Image (cartoon, rainbow, N blue to C red; front, side):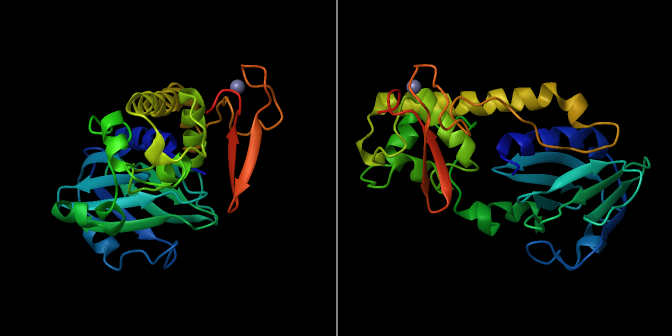
Amino acid sequence: MPELPEVETTVAGLRPVLEGQRLTLVEPRRANLRRPFPIDLRQRMTGARVIELGRRAKYGLIVTDRDDVMIFHLGMSGRWRIDPAEIEKHDHLVLETEDGRRLVLNDPRRFGSIDLVRSDEIDSFAPFAVMGPEPLGDDFTGRYLKAATKDRKAPIKQLLLDQRTVAGLGNIYVCEALHMAGISPAKIGGQISGPRYDKLVIAIKQVLKAAIAAGGSSLRDFVRPDGELGYFAKDWLVYGREGQACHCGALVLRRVDSGRSTFYCRKCQK
Ligand SMILES: [Zn+2]
């Protein structure tokens, strides 16, 4: 499942193909993904020039000179393919540029989405309206997190996965950052001290930046000649490592709550 670093890397892979280009073709190949394609997508995007690409949480943003923003979410299985030789069954949206490049959004499980909003209305796009700060942004600090979780009786892990606390953090990165910061995933949010929150924020930024750097350095493979903007694997400290030794020597444990796994070390994380 694509997480924030994959979306960041996907945007970086799309940028050289799309930025500055006029779109000569915008073709949805079915009516919907998780929700219907915008009914006027083809009309508003065809002929528009892409002026900028960006990311908010796990959404990619394609901004045009018509003051529209096409917002994509990769869902569980979405990926962009660049200049594919053939259009395949699960290619649900095709874009072509004036330079003759072709991009297709492939999404077998169709949990992804495409939305189209006006640039000046982007903050009121429903998923963005209630979202907390970007984890890599300057306003995401230990002090912010301490204030945001004040009096909260939920476990810190649950609070970090809540998009209202911080935007776009997925299960893997929360498990890894909590381990790096030495904080138990079950620790009550309101009971964590300021200095420990400072440490947690540093860990979150570090684990995300390392993943983005790994994605960026593999971008050449990532945008392979066959054109798949794929996902990258990384070696995690605790995630997916149940029963293996933590660096402290204790075994990594796994707990499942409402279908979601938490990986942690009881010795390192208090
Ligand atoms: Zn340990």
